[in-house]
Image 1 (tube, helix red, strand yellow):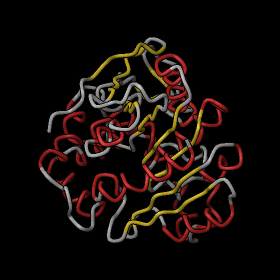
Image 2 (spheres, one colour; image 1 turned 135 degrees about the vertical axis):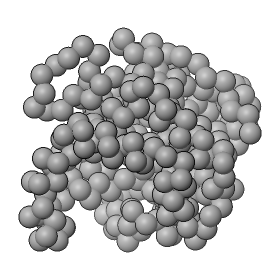
Image 3 (cartoon, one colour; image 1 turned 180 degrees about the vertical axis):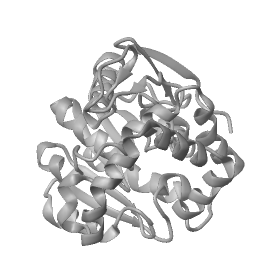
Length: 304
């Protein structure tokens, strides 16, 4: 598969990589921005960007620290500032997305996010206000390890939590964990969990996830993210977003609960649809792209 040409946008003093579908319908004034999940990149939308581009102008972007974007060093709360370091957070990434929308896209946009990209899309939608026309969340991260969810965790986890936090703060530990995970064989094993049907788990997908990990500072966003124990939950943001929201969920997602997604649909009035993809896991946009694309297109046509 040939990927869309990468472009570079200067944000603050960092370089951000993005692409526009080569098939994008520039006559249509509707814009879509695809936001990837943890450890992924804009190329994880390989089966979606050009499909949506046939109907709309469809962009994809690499979050700071991922893909081909700049990879500044991770700065944790207790650490002194160092040059070219940053505190990775949902505020940082959502600010990146909202600024990209206002400076590059320059017109109202739909935001589509997978996993942590969903939480980022929600926060960016809050910032963009009327310049966001809608949000599509694909297996949005529920962030079960966040401090605000302690009451939903078991007693053992509550007891182990201080030890866990101290453990993952250590750079030698986070670097070791990253090095072990950034291995094609390990990536394939993780994908076999994330894609229970096995559809589209191929060498191209493994390379999409593995290639960015070979860059010098790729471990930094990993360190920053695994130390996010007190940041936004999707449920903190739903009521602050005034545009329609669609949930798309893999029935067999091993990490993000479908039952919790159903609770969200009942509780929040701006969630207009919950579309469930049978047999799919955490990344149905890549595992079952035809079904996911169909659901996204229906929502976009209903709300445009």
